[in-house]
Amino acid sequence: MFILTYGEYKMSVKRINITIPEKNLKEINEFCATEKMGKSQLIREATAQYIASIKELKKKEQRRKDIEWAIKIQEQLRAKSKNFPSGKSAVEEIREWRDRNLKKK
Image (cartoon, rainbow, N blue to C red; front, top):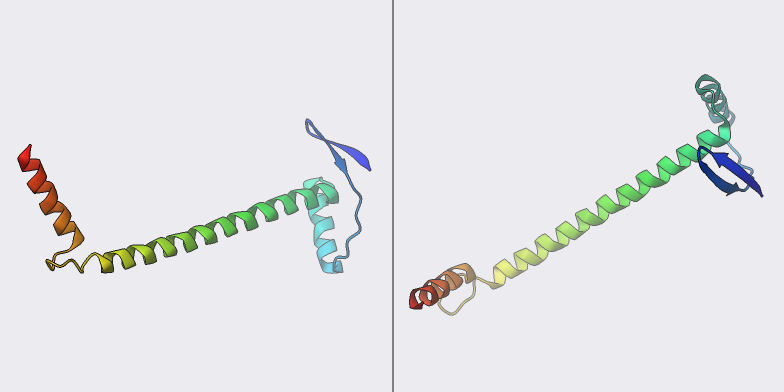
């Protein structure tokens, strides 16, 4: 295990071996030479950004599902609220009740 100083941060690091197509390795080498950065730094930054973007996509997808669920529940409640014995909607019933009770005060 090594200790890597990265800016102000120190982190323990592990060495790994990966396999990568030659074309990708050539692109990585060219990019690192142009940007004057090491391959390890590139891989660290790229994986951090990739993981963050996947997490964000999952959050957005969950939010979309939650909104769809809420819309479905709202539609069900709306359908149920139309079946009052008076034939009025729940909103009409509440307004009438409110008007009756506010007039008494």
